[in-house]
Length: 116
Image 1 (tube, helix red, strand yellow):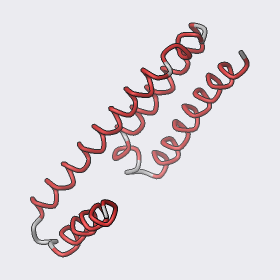
Image 2 (cartoon, one colour; image 1 turned 90 degrees about the vertical axis):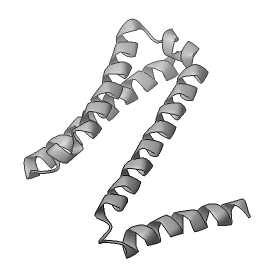
Image 3 (cartoon, one colour; image 1 turned 135 degrees about the vertical axis):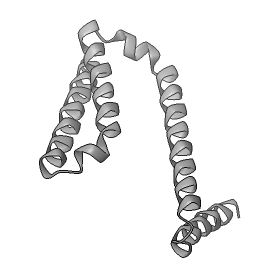
Image 4 (cartoon, helix red, strand yellow; image 1 turned 135 degrees about the horizontal axis):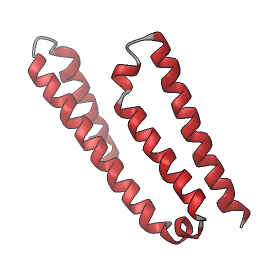
């Protein structure tokens, strides 16, 4: 029953956004609130994962830990610059390239962790 309620809430929010194109300020506010909520949940998830895997992260060498943190920072900066990068064709290619580089860095750090 709880899932039905949650699905109904999501459908109601989608209906409000779809049915009220004239209410631009309300839709912008709702979009902003949903974005803030999503980022808050994402920050909470990252905090819980960091606390859970803290020993494993610190068991990496200094270089691998720096690579992992740099990859995470690159993802954050790339996602922050998404509107500017997607405004041009080369910017979109750069966006994908930056995310690929960050993914490779995180993968190398993960493989280093798996070796030991």
